[in-house]
Image 1 (cartoon, one colour):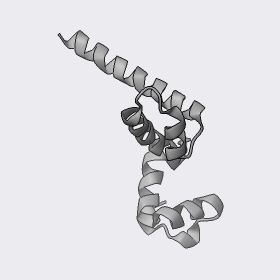
Image 2 (cartoon, helix red, strand yellow; image 1 turned 30 degrees about the horizontal axis):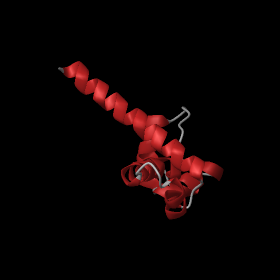
Image 3 (spheres, helix red, strand yellow; image 1 turned 60 degrees about the horizontal axis):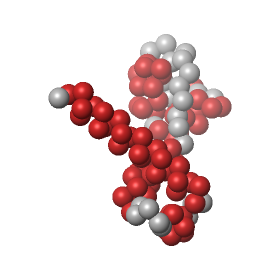
Length: 101
């Protein structure tokens, strides 16, 4: 099938929903690149979480978990987990710098 001539009317179900969401041209590119394979599209909150974690880490002073939890609308546990993840990222960055020397 020539994808240049593919129209929304030829699509059904989930495939039509995707094409309507991203547009027929983008759908054609998606089919060419990923046709017959499984792809995972993460939730937007996964991408936003990293940015939130960085901001929590920057604002953390060692004693303000509860305040940060209120500020970001999350639990204190989530604040502690964000700080732990950012600490791991910082440690791995430092190790890379050390290895480059």
